[in-house]
Length: 276
Image (cartoon, rainbow, N blue to C red; front, side, top):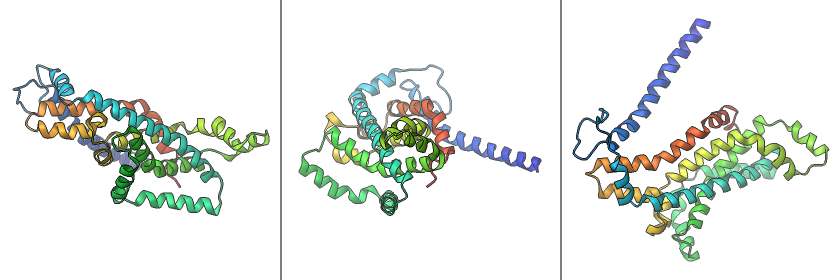
């Protein structure tokens, strides 16, 4: 029995290693291409002997990535913050109070997650135009927060149900603590793993968002990275060194974020974060 289990684990480990290598290959090609000097057309599999960082500075200037980085960081940061604050506050009563109304609300949240965002794009765009909020950070933050709020509430409520014992809250309630005090002093500090999971998921989705950005942020002053990169790629389709350098810089912040929070991310998933 133990030998069979060991064999199964080895097979699973081997398959996981193959999948990891398959995901690493595009990143490796991107890295080698971005570090090559102009005129170096050696194989993409060979790491350049003479490393050149000039592509990064040139791509940064030509694509105006500085302004796009700031816009994207503002939208992503504030959207993630609002999702964590309001998502956790909304999930707590849904997870703890088993009322018919809460069950209906929870069912509606799940149904909203199924609806493709593009189906509401046209009426949403007309509303934004009528409100005069096109080309503003505020509308991008509002739309992204609303788009990912159902998933956030779903993950938070599942985590609260499956991992946080009610006895902790009941003891505080006996001592006279109200619902908000219980949440902020007892429950929220225990939500660190799932908060990290939500932070990574929402930040990656919002950072890489293109469909909302191209609709609502058309002015170059408020353009996000995805829109700026799409234009830059079209203009430099024959200059793969610059394209690779720009793409590498654009993905770097999310890679750093994941590496910083990966311990909590794995804990959040393994602690029943996706259980209803």
